[in-house]
Image (cartoon, rainbow, N blue to C red; front, side, top):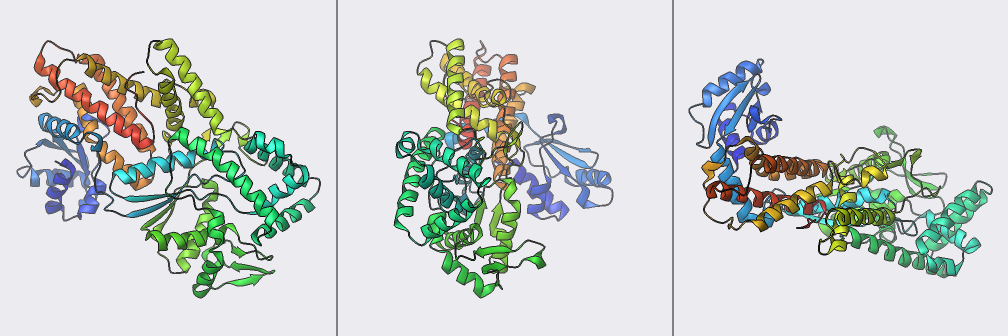
Length: 561
C-alpha cells in the first residue's frame, strides 16, 4: 500500500489540485510528532491556517482506515498513520521483496544516456576523477532500480591538443624503458615538463598544435605513439574500475566521435548560422548572452565543442535518448550552457540535456592541476584506505575470517561514501583524516550496523517468517525505524529527481542511527516470543534495506566486521 498515493487521491477530490502538484507539496515532517505526512495549504487560499482547518473538517469523515487522525498545525494539515498498519505493510513488503525492496517502475523505461568518469588518456586517474565516477555509478544503479533504462558512456579523453603536447614531450625527452616501467606517472612527468618548458619557450605550443594536426591527418608515427599511450592508460584505468566495481556500457570517446565531426558540423550549418572568424568556424551566441562557440580551428582541427556536438547527435540517434546526463565539474558550467544552447538552436529539445555539475576536490592551497603535477592518485587513496581498514579490523576483531577481503570492502566503501555523502554541488577539501575516518557519518558505521543486524539474526533461533503480531509495535524507537524503512522508496525517488546520491547516503545514516538507538533501548532477544519475533523481523528488514541502499551507492555490505 502506498499511503502517500491514497492521501493524494483523498486531497485531489477536495482541493481540485492536480496529482502532480499534490505529490510535490506533500512531505514527511522533520519531527515525527507532527505526523507521517504534511500537506501545506498555501495554495488553497489567502489564509492557509484557516484553509488547513477547513480542509480538516471537509475530509475528517472520509479518511481511509489506515489513518489514525489528522491535525491542523498552522498552515499544515498533518496525517498520522496507525502504527500496526504501517508496521505490517512495511515489514511484510521488505521481507517479500527482499533485494528488490524500493524498486519500482518510476522511470517508465525512459532512456537516460549518462556521460561520466571520462578520464584523460595518458594522464593519471587522480582523486578528482572519483567524483564523476562514483556519482555516475550510483545514479546508474538507482535509475536502473527505478525502472529507467540508463546507458553509461565513458567518454574517454583520448583526443585533443594535449596529445600534441605529449608527442612533442616524448619525442624530445622520452625514454622507452621509463615509459614501460611506470607508464602513467612517467607520462605525467613529461606533461608537467612540457608546461614548465613552455614558460621558457612559447614556440613549443605551436609545435604541439602541429603535432596534433598531423595526428588528425593520420601521421603513422604519431598515431603509433597515441595508440601506445592509450593502451597503457586503459590498463591503468581498468585496474581502478575493478577496485571500485564500476563498469560501462560504452567506452566511445573523443577519438571515436572525432570521425563524426564533419557530418555533425554539416548538420549544424543547415540549421544554425555559422561564420568564419580569422579562418576558424564559429557560432556567434551574442544574442543569447553567451560567448561564441568554436567549431573548427583555423588549421582545420576539431574542438571540444564540435566533438561534443557530434557525440550528442550520435547518442540521440543510436540510443533514442529521452535524457542525456553529463556528470562534469561545475567549472564547466559555461561550456555546457553554450553546447546546450547550440543544440537548442539546431531544433533539438533543450529539456533532453542536463549538466549535473559537481564541486571539486581541493588542496588546502588550491585546486588540483595535472599541469602543475599536484595530483593525488586515486589508487593511492584507495590502497591507503584498505591498509587503514586492515589495521582497525586487526585491533577490533583479530579472529575475523577473510580479513583482507573485508578490509577491501570497508576501505573502498569509506572512500566512496566520503564523496557521495556530500551534496554533489559542494567543493570537498581534501583531508586524509576525514576521508578515511571510520567513525561518525561514514560507510563503515553503516556497514557495522548491517553486520550487527546479521549477528543478531544468527544468534536468534527463531524464523523471522513465523506469524508476527504487528500489534506489538508501538514503542517510539521501533516506530522511528519502521517509518524510515517505509520511506526508503521515496528517498530513492528524490535521488533520481535531483541527480544527487547524497539523499540516499544521508537516509542510510539516519536509518543506521535509528536502528542503533532501537538496539540499545529495545532488547531483541527476549523471553516474550511475540515481541522477539516482531523485533527480529524489524532487524531483518533493516539488514535488507541497508544492504540494498549501500549497493545502490556502489558499496558492499559485509555480514561480519
